[in-house]
Length: 209
Ligand code: ADP
Ligand code: ADP
Ligand code: ZN
Image (cartoon, rainbow, N blue to C red; front, side, top):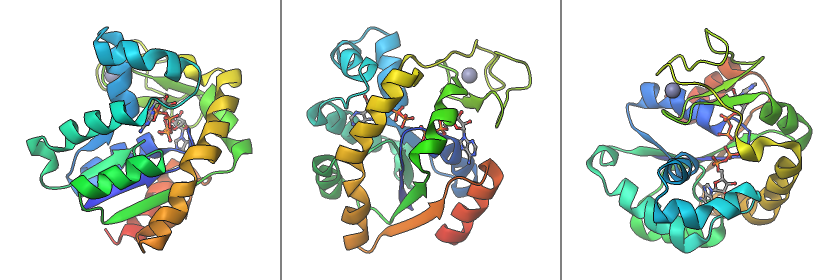
């Protein structure tokens, strides 16, 4: 199955993706993680993307569409994939429709009021991409990644000022994708406010896994 996870920043896409990877036996592709890795490695892509990301704006479509195309052309995506954070604009969705056949877009519904607490408590591992929350999903040892042992950090764009901009960007440019996939008959929506395990259960039911 080729699955898209839709939802506001902090709605829980990455967290659900890490569960669905095991359940579905397919890889997830997070354009945000790929871009953060590119910044950490100082690549040309990273240099181009950094200012947009720090400001809570989207990286230009041309850059992310190429990146996504190359990633899903790799062998491990042949059996299916989960997209986390792509597409984020209508042109990205249209480009995706020309390179892959999407089975389902699963939308995680979380109101803006809940998002701020998700972001302020989020801690991430920049080495392996694992995501935690100080209250909702703490690591076994404070500040240390369960998966790879690296130090957990607060994402630069999870500061309250930038979160506000990211939510505005989301409503203006990404939310229209809900109607886009609904029109294609591919949309499934679930409540994303009910805790991590309940969200997983809703997703399993919605996807018929
Ligand atoms: P979140 O977890 O908050 O949804 P991501 O890790 O997916 O955030 O993305 C972080 C930032 O990376 C975005 O604010 C944006 O600048 C950039 N980005 C990630 N994916 C895309 C994309 N598909 N199109 C444009 N920009 C993107
Ligand atoms: P996204 O990828 O959509 O930006 P994340 O998966 O990184 O979102 O989740 C944002 C934060 O909220 C993380 O700190 C994560 O641990 C926490 N979180 C994710 N899903 C839930 C949930 N269903 N209930 C409570 N907290 C959650
Ligand atoms: Zn890690």
